[in-house]
Length: 243
Ligand SMILES: NC(=O)c1ccc[n+]([C@@H]2O[C@H](COP(=O)([O-])OP(=O)(O)OC[C@H]3O[C@@H](n4cnc5c(N)ncnc54)[C@H](O)[C@@H]3O)[C@@H](O)[C@H]2O)c1
Image (cartoon, rainbow, N blue to C red; front, side, top):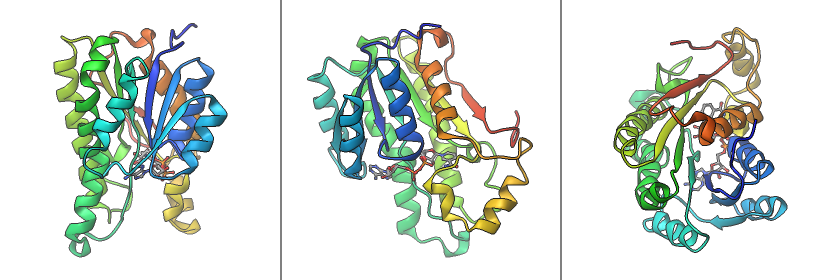
C-alpha cells in the first residue's frame, strides 16, 4: 500500500527516544523528509542516521515554535506535524505543586498548540496532517491515580485536536490524535517493576505496546489513505480501554 509520504516533510517532537524515535524511523523508511526536535542532543545522532535534520531545543522556551517554523520554511514547508513530546510528573493531587502542574500542561498541551499555530500556514499549503500523541489517560484517568496533571493535559490535547480539526477541515489540514495504552519506553520506567506487572495485568493482550506499533498508526494517519479521517482520537492499547 503506497502511503504517498515520499519527500513529505515531517516535524516530530520528542524524537530522541521512545515513541518519537520509532516514528522518526518509520517515516524515514517511507521516504519522508525529517526535522526531529528534542531537548536531548541525542536527537541529532538519530537524525543523521536517518538522513534527516534536527533541532535541539526545549519546547517550553518562548520562540522555539517560531524557530522551528523558520527552519521548515527553508526546507520547503512542513506537511506533517507530530506533537509527540510529553512528560509525566506523577504525584497525589494534594501534593502536586503549581510548578509541576504548569510544566506538564505546558509541554503536553500548550507546546503542541504553539507549534501547530506556528506551522499552520505551511501545513495548509501542503494538505497537511497533524497528529497529537495523547494517551488512554485522555479518555479516563490513569490506572492507579496520582497523576492529575498528566490526565488533565492529555484531556486538553484532545480538545485542541477536535477544535483544530474542525477549523482545518475547511483549510486542507487534517488533525487527529493517537491514544496509546502503555508503551514500552523510558516513561513507563517511572514505575517500579511490581507496578509495571500490576499494570500489565489490566491489559487484555497481556503486554505493553512496542513503540513501532504506535508509529505504524501514525504513518497511516499521516498518509493519503486516511484522507477522510478528521478529529479522531484513536485507541491503540491491547484492549485496555475501548470506546
Ligand atoms: N510510554 C507510554 O506508555 C505512553 C502512553 C501513552 C502516551 N504516551 C505519550 O507518548 C509521547 C511519547 O512518550 P514516550 O513514552 O516515548 O516518552 P519518553 O520519555 O521516552 O520520550 C519523550 C521525549 O520527549 C522529549 N521531551 C520532553 N520534554 C521536552 C521538552 N520540553 N522539549 C523538547 N523535548 C522534550 C524527551 O527528551 C524525550 O526524548 C508522550 O506524549 C507521552 O505522554 C506514552
